[in-house]
Amino acid sequence: MEWRGRRQSDNIEDRRDMSPGGGVGRNPFGRGLGFPSGGGGMRRAGGGLSIGTIIFLVVMYLILKAMGIDMLQVLDGGGSTTGGSGYEQSESGTRTPANDEMTAFVRTVLAETEDTWNGIFQAAGQTYQEPTLVLFSGQTESACGFASAASGPFYCPGDRKVYLDTEFFNELSQKFGASGDFAEAYVVAHEVGHHVQNLTGILPKFNQARQHMTEAEANQMSVRVELQADCFAGIWGKFTEQKGILEAGDLEEALNAAQQIGDDTLQRRSQGYVVPESFNHGTSAQRMRWFKRGFDSGRVGDCDTFSNPV
Image: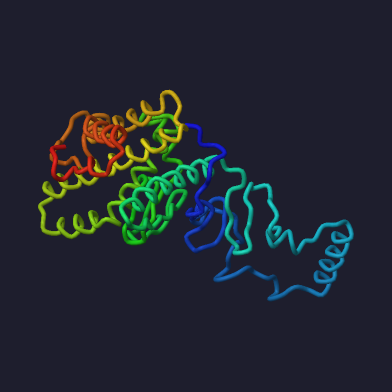
């Protein structure tokens, strides 16, 4: 997939360097460096600093400043400069990865989904409301509850955001055997497909109806929802192909990813047998078929998984 040099979306919220309390740290959630606490703060010998210590600190500060080292800036984290951590701090106090190829890739894929769905909605006389994609590492909060890397990528209709721990891409390749940039792009496009379902009222209707369903019925309906999102991802793939940025083997990468994350394949890999009534995303064959259907036609009307056999 020839994604480099193309437009990148601004609808990205990068939380990969944020601690749960809103602070910044390379290793969040209480594992970063800190000062020992003695009942609520740093301990001070004798209840305060001696006059001699204060004079020494002032002298050292002046000497270091004369050498071109401003300890106030060092202690403050260097302002807006780029430090050895490889992160840039903005005026708002948040930091984003500098020269992060993964961020650039996700931004570009998200921009391509925006172009696709803006065009489709405009052709239907409607306005596409673009989602925000949240990048996080390990754990984060969402309007749908607490999110962790174990939950995998997901879309939250409550805040209209896609959540992605980019380490999932490594897992997709190493654990599930689905490598390639177009396989990764398919994951993003699938979650954006859920956003399209939310805008068109499909997700709200499903979430309301499932309250009156048995678990088996809800699973069956969930499969149809997920397969439609696969089909919508295929539509995005079709529009991307028409732009001439797909490379040989890209379609096969996406289809392989769909195959590797089918319910039957995942269950067989994890427990050695399958339980069809527990499927909630669709089999490998179903996921591949519906992605390919969207890719072949490029039409939303061909993604009706609710009226057609899946």
